[in-house]
Length: 525
Ligand code: GLN
Image (cartoon, rainbow, N blue to C red; front, side):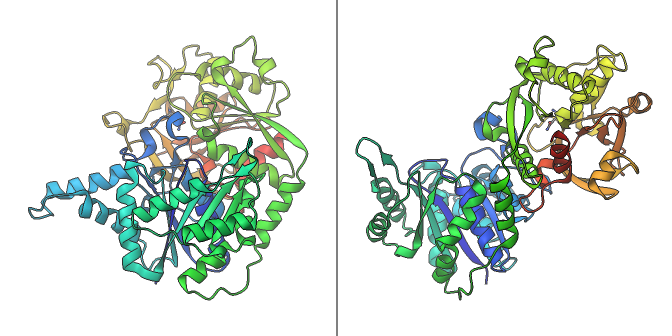
């Protein structure tokens, strides 16, 4: 008896459908239900793996190695569930599946059309979790009215009809405030609901995004103009932290209203003690610590999971982490001291390609020499390895073969990557095991000898140089047991100088922040 919640958005993009979907998931979980959340993205790319972060923000990676939308990061951080490739679907994947079936001859001579073939494939993907969980929350990316969203809306319309009281639609809209008129305007919401109705879908619940508090009168007006019960019109005001959203939704009875719509007994309001404990820590953490984020994309969403992991780790260490973005393209030997002044530690970001790497290397040299805490993630770890080769081992031409073929490619391409011609979905992706060296700093931090973490890269530490690194003080303390690939380096003589080939940030959640981030922020304090 799996039940389905569809989350759509109207009026404008960036309303925070992902946060609302994750919050609904959290509230249902708190009532003891099992849930999953999936994201449908209406673009033609098979996955966002080939998208520039300026286009679509960070690429999030699931345990089973799917490159996905960053909203899956919110789902995992809020609910602690582990998402998989089934939780992320793009229009491109839908069309590819249909076209592959057509080439295979599965349609037995039929003309393949958007309705019913594309819509059936969308429905199949929504229904694939049937009987696995109590609730499936399906977030539809984009804004209704867009040409791209039409097949998704048609699929939802059909499912709502077929599933009856087992399906509910939550629609997010925006209520703008007009300063000159000193008024909040509901007309865009009315139009957006009309658009939904035109597609044959009556939204059951409306979440109104607003910068100012909405009076009951405004909610009443929206309810009666949009055919929605008053208790099903909730507001989502701007809050100091996205993690306040679930409790704000609970206070307005969003989860109770949803359950009533499904005809499920509502029961007591769950207390969510650990979540409230976290919020209390967040509110009372006032002391600040500045951490430098050394990367090349000056855009909040580009390093979303890293930012959130640092902030969460700060809260559990009773501090407010202030992230100072430092564009590595602008770092030079002459200005590095000034750029890093007032900063307690640096995190050197993941990335691809040549742009900005020399600045990352200069920042890391500064951190190593001055014993400033430094955390290298993926490309950041590779830069730690290159910096050490150039400035300690004396290989001035050391580089990654991603950037230049030199006699000292201390970071090199894996054998199995060499013949790959397709760029999409072909990196080393998803979770791999890693064994930690006994007595190492990371073994102490994790408190366990064996870990599993998510990867997204083509290049690797070149094992030819391993002994030389270790003799000179950079230790290869984490390795993959099957391949022998180096996954973690550290310099034990420094306070905190650790680089990971994997991405620990994907595994950090609100109730379970990642040990490496906790330890790094603690050292920065
Ligand atoms: N560009 C590097 C590689 O492919 C690092 C990738 C990353 O930072 N995610 O190995």
